Image (tube, rainbow, N blue to C red; front, side):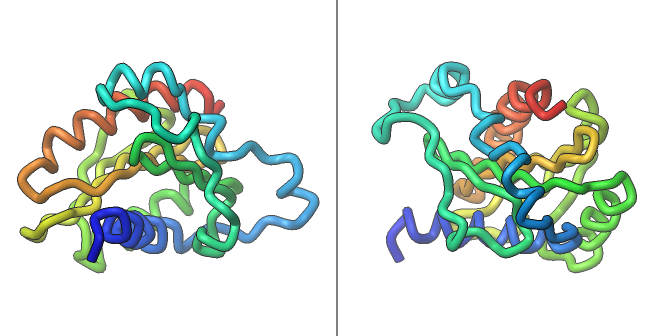
Length: 172
């Protein structure tokens, strides 16, 4: 399987597992809510990742490429951003408990990002593992995720935390 396809499938797995409790939005609500690309600080991501922008900036994920429960998605430099709205502290905690209970991902609390946050990562050895930072700011849940080789999970967690910290102020 090509790395790009593996990458997308792994992130879709994160997206599907993390965001199972989102309340569907109405068509009227969709028109007024922000898109996930609003949380991307392109110059800062270029600096943090050391990558070059080959596609002309953040790219909105087409609606048909997102699991139905997502409000929006964006990708930039291989980093995926997912936004969900109408999130309460209770629904955020329920989604986290779901991850912990299913055992597909390890979960670890993080402080200093949004109202509450955690890392999630696939602990299985393998070529590419899904890693993410999930945070809640008010009624928004933002996931910043990437796939990485299994021996690079810890450095990726650090990078994603830095990226999430640039996104969090925009989520208010």
